[in-house]
Image 1 (cartoon, rainbow, N blue to C red):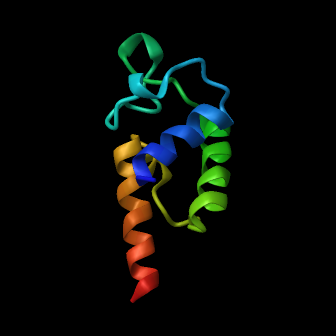
Image 2: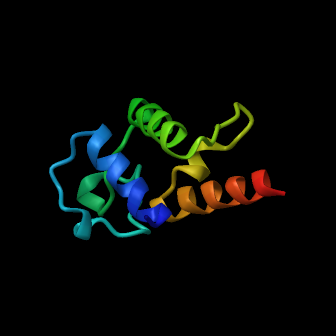
Length: 90
C-alpha cells in the first residue's frame, strides 16, 4: 500500500474522523483550522498519529525533529517516512 494512503488511514482511524479517505488530499493542512480548509489537529492528535506511524512503519521521531514541519500534511509525513526507510536500507 502506498505510504500516503496508509498515513491517511492511520489519521482517520486514530482520531476517529468522520470523513472518507477520498476527501483527504495529500496536501491538506493538518493543523490549520477546519473552517480554513485544514483538519484542525492539536498536539495530542500529533502524538496519536506519531504512535500509529511508528507502529506501522517502524519509523521513530526524535526529539530534535521539527514536528511542526513534519506534521504539516500527509505529503510531508510521507516524505519523512520514505526518506527514513531509504536510509535504513543503506
